[in-house]
Amino acid sequence: MDSWTFNPIATVASERRNRYDVPRQGTLDASHTARVLLLPGRNFEQALDDLEGFERIWLIYVFHLNTGWKPRVHVPRHRADKVGVFATRAPYRPNPVGLSCVRLLGIDGLTLHIAECDLLDGTPVLDIKPYLPYADSFTDAATGWVPRNEELYTVQCQQRAEAQLAWLREHGVDIFPFARTQLEAAPRDGARKRVYPSGHVSEEYMLAYRTWRLRFRVDDDRRVVDIQEVFSGYSEEDLASPGDRYEDKDIHHQFNNHASFPWPDR
Image 1 (cartoon, helix red, strand yellow):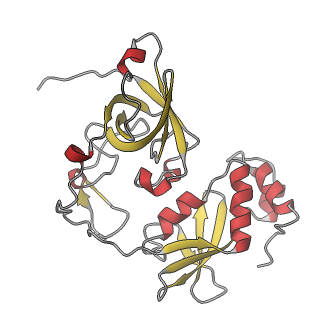
Image 2 (image 1 turned 120 degrees about the vertical axis):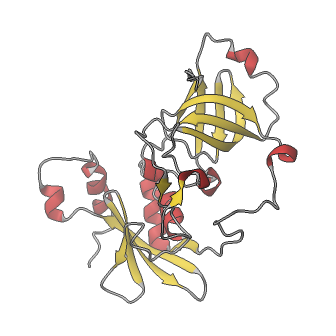
């Protein structure tokens, strides 16, 4: 068979740099914005003519951090066994090509401002197409092994956790989109996510996010996950020791020393 070589037309600029920072679908992170930076000197200014006015666009891009592919993959919910990769949206594909429908906020020269984006910073973009509801939406289509109407948990924060997450977001650490994605379905599933019982209170659990920990409770009757508080995953000894593998000890020191957020007494 013939082979083909494609040249990217743009790259994505985003605060999301780690694979676990992005949701499974961009619509699950509506507040997150990013930019598509088209390459100069390619006459793309004219190619963008008339795109403004479309509320959504398709981005065709490369899973640039992946190496190799998998014929069968584990899925984040619904199935305990592996599923054929062609029956999933998983990034581990024979050709590492992705497709996302994002919200177009505006165009400024060669920069597209977008929202509801599940692409990482530095993602190469191969093409841009307008989203057309009459051609691209089939609401009655069968969904195979994926339930059509899944009953999810509502993920909410107690006042303390909400203030802590807001403080971290202001300092460049945005945890809540990750937490919501992890906890809205099967919140106790420690086999697929870094969740484990807290060991202190019944129905109280911990969720790990890099070097941070979230304490939460589950109410099955109300289908609610309540995030109680956020705290550092470092011990006092860890923070006092030399070395900073994740280059984030300074923000942990600031967090622990903040007047409103004393070190949790656990």
